[in-house]
Image 1 (cartoon, rainbow, N blue to C red):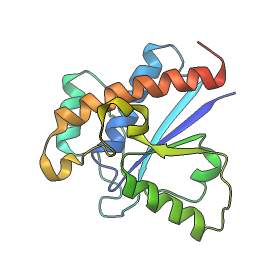
Image 2: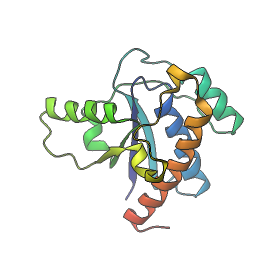
Image 3: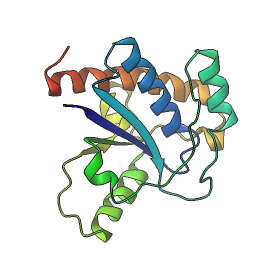
Image 4: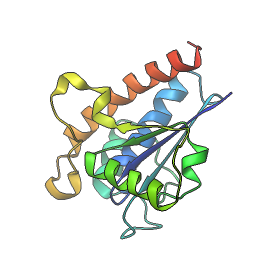
Length: 162
């Protein structure tokens, strides 16, 4: 059995691709790439087909984390059936994803749907800030790195493999 994770942000060029790349890296480091698949998507269509933002790529390169082949895409109805964990980078994205579920007439998705910062309750913030607007990619990376570690622990516990 495989776990499938989808990270969701607004444009799918800053936060969610950063989370996707970091999580993939952590999964590989834990030798679980055959058990856990990771993807990302956005709720807005402004950057479809574009690679991650330069700030995201630069930070991932600094940490020697691959972002090869990543391109922005929209959340699709099929994602609600394909993914076990849908992790929204902020509360607005969570509302948008819930609205997509409602519009699609999907009353109950098998996916666990939650915000990224629920993984880091001690941080005292509800949302991962969007570095597209403030340029603070290092802070976002710190949150993403810590949160992905917590998510990996949660998935390992859920799937009963360590």
